[in-house]
Amino acid sequence: MRVKDRVAVVTGSGRGIGETTVHRLSEEGAMVVVTDINEKGAIKVANDIKARGGKAVAVKTDITKIAEVEALMEMAVKEFGRLDILVNNAGFNRDMLVKDMTEKDWDDVIDTDLKGAFLCAKFASKYMVEQKYGKIVNLSSRAWHGNPGQANYSSAKAGIIGLTKSLAWELGRYNINVNAIAPGMISTELVQSHPKFEMIKERMLANQPIKRIGETIDVANTILFLVSDESSFISAEVIHVSGGRFG
Ligand SMILES: NC(=O)c1ccc[n+]([C@@H]2O[C@H](COP(=O)([O-])OP(=O)(O)OC[C@H]3O[C@@H](n4cnc5c(N)ncnc54)[C@H](O)[C@@H]3O)[C@@H](O)[C@H]2O)c1
Image: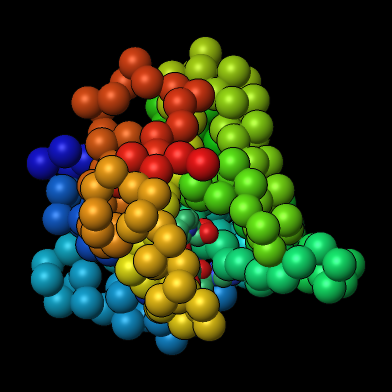
């Protein structure tokens, strides 16, 4: 078991990459806090884990709300006694050209995809510093390199890399590793519901050494590696899980 008895909070784990991640962490012995703005999704995933013999609790949290984030981390420690792993996974995109993008389109994406990760790291790291142990993984995206129609999302995901590297410096002395993952196109509801999904997929496959779309397990396995002690000398790193595609 690679994360036996570790306590993990994974944001946005009511579906998609986060859902696969909490299952994978649970299979490897972690106790998981399944948290999502979508309470139904979180409860379903936590129940699935418990039905397989794992330890899980579901919590509704909007990661853009500071009081909710603070309460989430407090609750994780109350429930399971410590907090070892934070995966900042919750996020979404709202794609359009800058000329059409409203201030709200910009703020909403930055608030969830960047500020939410900052708030979660701020309150989770308090406990990790006390324990002198912790692992933080932040979900960036291959889009951090820049994409037409994704100025808000690309900016948030590039910001995640700055956040990751700053946190790695601030927290390393407390035995806390902080890394980012930049997935390419992964087969989730978020991606498949994109109106230009087929067109984007064709373009992606033409520009990618590995000729397939990614699966949530590709990302979950990389997260598992980064939150296990197998990677304890890796910090401030960005791992692309993108079939070899960068730009
Ligand atoms: N799927 C991809 O191809 C892909 C590629 C690169 C990066 N990513 C990133 O990976 C992460 C997960 O993506 P996914 O494809 O699994 O998405 P998804 O939409 O399937 O899941 C995201 C989850 O986050 C939750 N969420 C949204 N806003 C929230 C908030 N304010 N507070 C709490 N929860 C909130 C949603 O309810 C949802 O359950 C995101 O950060 C995304 O940007 C995904």
